[in-house]
Image (cartoon, rainbow, N blue to C red; front, side, top):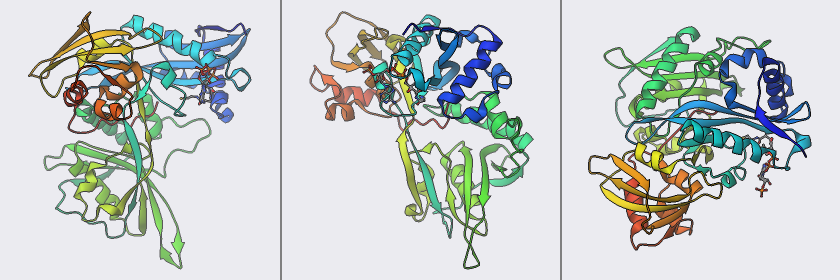
Length: 411
Ligand SMILES: CC(C)(COP(=O)(O)OP(=O)(O)OC[C@H]1O[C@@H](n2cnc3c(N)ncnc32)[C@H](O)[C@@H]1OP(=O)(O)O)[C@@H](O)C(=O)NCCC(=O)NCCS
């Protein structure tokens, strides 16, 4: 198969690219949206296509995102998205070619990490990506949901136009402290608050937007939600569906859940689709079993391209020096790196000729990078190799974070 992989060059090619992606994701009904989506992809050098003659048969996009790492740095992130190959051209190596083209370009741009959310688990490990955060959707019994303490915060409904800006601003404040959180472009807020519905879509009037304010009147939480009505034996049995819920801390998160549960007629709440797997706000419930996890899965996958830069960008839990050998058959990250973490949390990292304390493949470096998975956990299954006795424990302690990393943003 003689397939050419290159960036799309014209608006016409971009429109064909969008149509190919929609067909690849089995959403052919969305074809024709190219002109509307064009402004989301300012840099066509990040939009990759596979061409079989003049037929566009493969798509991949790189989003210019930021990732919050331990220590609060927001590092440039190569956000891989829109990976599809036409059903007629699958399993012939095209996704691999598209990925290689983009990862090479990201490395040239100086981005030290690429990330994605995997449609299917088995696809991306082979390309050096490892799962780094986990997610769950929470199902909450809304009848008599009680909390162990008074919850501060005042709830107020706002309209969708106000939500567009308040939610985006709050998200960025939460993201500044939120290890693992990925930046979210403006168009996603426009779409989610009904400011730019797709052609033919009804405006999202069914969604309500609420904010939580602290005693100074500052917005510290936001929730968007809608209802489905049901009556069982003429008794109310409604479900409240949470579209989004974010807050600066778990106490205000709990305050928003209380607001949701306080609705008459609502017997159960289906939480946001990509919530924290550890749902810290539940610790404030009198009965934690009123909230149960559903649909738990891996979420953000990381692919380290430049270990020296990535490891120097985050802070560490203690002072230590450790030598890591990173295996990467695609070459980008391969090498032996000395990581020197200082007592103030800062770090230096550089290639070294010293013998390694630990060897790990690059996908597992992605898994431990944010602290979501520990080296000790991976070593328990033989997934990292220890050369110096105690080095895996030291590596785990070094990378530890107090609160598990979490990213709610799908891309
Ligand atoms: C996933 C998808 C992009 C793969 O494209 P492709 O061109 O068939 O992939 P390639 O031929 O380059 O495959 C590369 C390798 O990944 C493997 N692979 C590809 N898709 C896989 C899948 N869904 N599950 C398991 N392995 C997969 C191939 O077997 C091949 O293995 P190898 O390294 O041992 O040779 C394509 O099947 C697709 O469009 N699927 C539907 C949309 C989708 O899921 N997109 C991903 C969004 S995150």
